[in-house]
Amino acid sequence: MMGGRYGSGIDVSWLFWLLPVAVVVLLAARAALALSGSARRRRSGSAPGQNRNAAAGRSNARRILDERYASGELGTQEYRDRLSVLTGPGTQPEEPGVNPRDGGRSSQPVALSLPELKQRAASLLIAADDAVRSNEQEAGFVQAQFGDGAVAPFMKALADARSNLSESFKLQQTLEDAIPATEEQQRASYTEIISRCEAASEALAEQKVSFDSLRELEKNAPQALELLRSGQAKAAAKIADAEHRMAELCVRYSDAAVGPVSDNIDQARERLKFLDTAARTAQQKLSEADPAAAAVAVRAGEESLHQTNVLVDAIAKVRHELDSARTNLDRAVEDAARDLAQAKATMAAGQHTDLAGPVAGAEAVLSQVQQQLQSDGIDPIAALQRMEAALQGLDRALSGVRNQQDQARRARDALQQAVMSAQARISVASDYIAARRGGVGSGARTRLAEAQRTLDAALSLQQTNPESSLTHAQQAAALASRAAELARSDVQGFGGLDNRGYGGGMFGSRGCGGGLGGAMLGGILIDSILRGDGGDAGRDGDPGGSGSF
Image 1: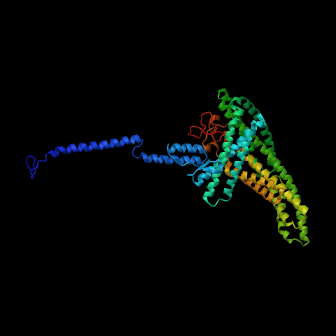
Image 2: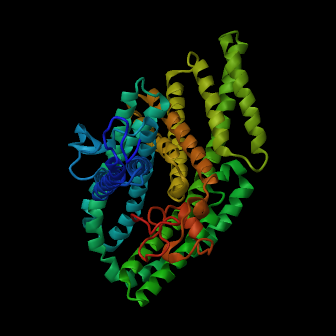
Image 3: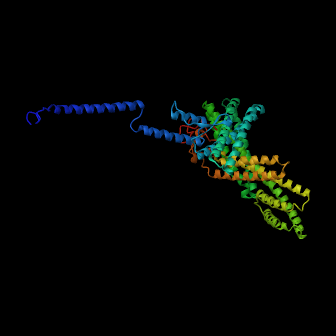
């Protein structure tokens, strides 16, 4: 090969000049393609790997949104609005379902699992029950100030809310007693609970606007604050008097008997302490020309005053119920002694030998109760319950021996005692929950609502079916006792401000005292933790609370 020629005689030296040019062209084309792809990604707002990250982010956001809805933190409409934003315009996001029985009222997202649906139902039950209790308290203040006519529309809304809440608790009790066979049935029941609770809360919220307008609390805050201070002085005197009564109760009756009100004095002092904090805060906000915040503080003080009175009055109720039970116990002991004498005489005559078992059982209970009566520290309600149960067994055994008049008398006495016992237990449980609603869950509230419904049934059957009435009254008493047990267990596990991660809003920071712990337990600070000052009203790390008390 010479002079750039190959053996074939063809000149190919130009290829060495073409190769660098081809490399440059290829590199330029690759760069152009890269730039074009980058521009497209910039226009679509994504970079390599960002599409996958964005999808994962949207999935995580949806999960958080569903969890917040399930816990009751978000309302249905707010859930739908946020879901629409998350899924973007022009799409049809998966939305809450519709309950045709409530005229198209939204119920729950079909995406929620059954446990999440159950959690949301429980959360809304608590929220609706709290709303009813809180509005009942405020209705009392308005009624005292403006008269019955002024609160008539609100009382109707309150009655409707109670009705929806009662049906919701009934459904919840049914679900807990016997879980339906299918998931579809369970979902339907939880859906109705959610729908009814939302209806109750919405009805009260609508009337609340008229209520607020009537009270004009922002304008009348100085006068309301003056009334609050007057109520504070009276409540302080009541606490001092109740302390003496409590000391007497502890001497006369057992710890178990006074257990439902054992910490009422301490709790009442906590509420009164917070009342003072709220009143001072209201005064400060008025001096700062912030009537809206002053009105919020006044409302907090009113609720605290109400709970103080509930706690103190509960001690007097328990004392009356224990004293009544003690009197009735003496009468039950006399009845038992007389019935046992009759039964033994019948057996001695060689008749009704089947009385031996009931007689032995009644004698054992009677002996135990008589020993307890000789010493201090008895629980007369529990002793009376045991005595009545023993007498009922003896009554059944003596039904063929007694005349019709004696049987009717004993049946009336047993029914009257059962109704009184149920009423007393419901009252104790209701007062306990009312003053500690911030720490009590749906289980106790459900049992209490079912106890009241069962007692109402007992009262309606008193004249027409005394035997069924007696059964219902006994069931009501048992449900109320269970409600009280669950409520006390909830309160024992309540962690207050530290456990829930809340600050005290305009009333101070966590750990500063001022009755904040008691106000939290009482449910006075739940939801927004008294928003209005823009401070640490929400959970730690959040910009602020949402909602109101």
